[in-house]
Amino acid sequence: MQILEFGTVIVGSGLAGLTAAFHSSKHGSVAIVTKSQLDTSNSYYAQGGIAAAISEDDSPEQHLHDTLVAGRGLCDYDAVEVLVTEGRDRVLELIEMGMPFDKKNGKFILGLEGGHSKRRILHAGGDVTGKELTSFMLNKVKEIQAIKSFEYVAALKLLQKNGCIVGVQCYDFATGKNIIFKAKAVILATGGLSRLYIRSTNPYTATGEGIAMAYEAGAKIADMEFIQFHPSALYIPGQEAYLISEAVRGEGAWLLDENGRRFMKEAHPLAELAPRDVVAYNIFKKIQTSEANNIYLSLKHLDSDKIKKRFHHIYEQLKTLGLDLTSDLIPVSPAAHYMVGGIRTNLNGETNISGLFICGEVASTGVMGANRLASNSLLECLVFGKRAGDKAAKTETPEYSLKNIDPVYVNSSNETKFLEIHSELAIIMSENMGIIRSEEGIKKVLRRLNELDMEYGGSQNEHNNIRIRNTVTVCKLIAMAALAREESRGSHIRDDYQQESIYFKAHSIQQKNQKIKFEPVKK
Image 1 (tube, one colour):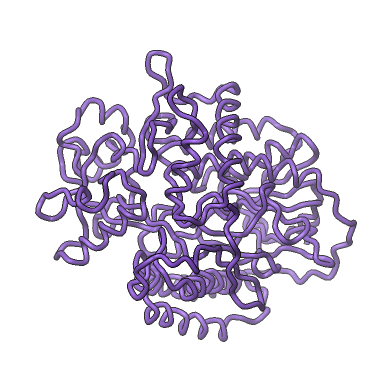
Image 2: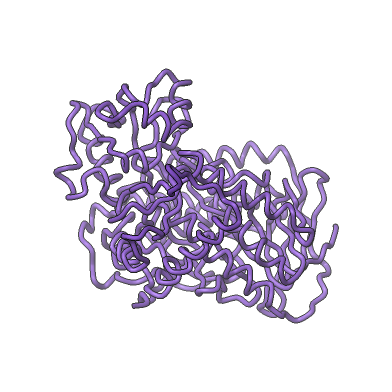
C-alpha cells in the first residue's frame, strides 16, 4: 500500500476538476485522480457551449432571471447571483488566457438555447465546445509542476478522522496497488450518474461513485430526484444515444411528430426553445401516444451551408450513420443527460464535513434548481471550481496518521455479476425512474434495491462489490427523494401528483442514517 501526500487531492478530470486544480496549485501541491483518462468526462463531450452575459444588450441580471425561471422555484438566489456575475469574469479571463471561442468578423458568435432570452452562448469549434474548453484547461494544468496526475486510478473511499476528511483510498488498475492520498483537503469533481439509465448521452464513467462516497462519509445529498433528460438524443435501435445539441434547436430546428407535424408550438410559447424539462416531457408523451419509439428533428427549412459549418461534427457523425442533418428527418428521443442535484455545498464548495469540497456536476450548489438552464453547467464548473480550489488549498486540517487501512482487491470473476446488476438496474430505473414516475413504480425500484442492499451491503473490500454497493446507494437516493417529493416540478414529474406544491418549494436533503428532510430555498 502506497501513501502519497499532497496539499489538495482532486478526484475527477472534467472542467470543474481541472479548474479547481489550476487554482489550488497557486497555494500548494495538487493531485488529480481519475479512474479513466484525463480527457474522459461529461465536460469533454459537451456540445452546446457556455452561457455568459458578455454582449452589450445582455446583463448578468437577465441571465439570473432566465436561470431562476428555468429552475422552477428551487434555485438558491445567492448561488445564481455568484454564477452569473463571476461567470462573466471567468469567461473573460479564459479569453485573455487565449481560449479560442468562435468568432465572425472579429466578434464572438453567440448562440441561443432553450430558456435563454438572449443570445449568450459562446461556443468553440462549432459544436465541440466541451472538448475545446476542457482540452484548453488540461493543457494549462499540464504546464504546472505543482500538479501531478494519476490516470486509471479509482477513488473508492474517503478517509476520515474525528469527523474530518484527511485523504482518499484509491486502487491503481495499472499496478494492482492501493494508493492512499493524504491531503489537507479532498475535492470531489466526479461528474454525473446518467449511465445508470439505458439511454444516456454521458461517457461510461458517469455512474455516480462520488455521490456514494460522500454519502457514506456523512455528507448531505440534495435534490437527487431531479434527473434531466436531454430532449434530442439520436434514436437508432442498437446504437448509443448520440447527443444532438440544444443549439441545433437554437438555430431554428423543428421537432416533428410521426405525422410530420410540429407539436411544441401548442405546448409552450417558446415552442422548441422551451426549457428542457418541458420539451423532454412533451416528446415523451408524444412517443407514448404513438406507435413509434421516437419523434423527428428537422432542419430542412434552414440554410444547409450554415448548418454544415455550425454543426460540423454532428453533421459528420450522422453522415457515418447514413443520415444528412440538413435534409433528412433525424430520429430522436430523450436520454438521461444531467444530474441536477448532488452533494450539498455552500458558495465555496464546502460540505458539512470538514476537509471535503465538491464542484461540477456532482455538486448541488443551489444554482440548478429543479431543472438546469442550458449551457450553465460549464459555467458552474469554472465559477465554483475556482472557489472550491482556492478555499480547499487554504484549508488547515489537523495532522493525522493513516494506519491500519484495509486494502481493496480485485476479483475479476465478480465483474460479470457487477455488469449483470448494473444492466438490470438500468432497465428498472429507465422504466420507473425516468421522465415520468409514480408511487407504484418507485416502490418497485426500492424493493429490488433493498434486496440488493441486503445481499451486498457488507464490508467486503472487493472492487466489484464496492461498485455494486455504490450503484445501489445512488439509485436508492434517487428513488427515496422521488418518493418523498409528492409533486411535479422541473425534471421530476409524478403522474400521481401532477401539479407543483408550495409545500415542496424546498430542497430534499438526505444523510446516512437519517430520515429525508426538506430545507428552504435561499431567497
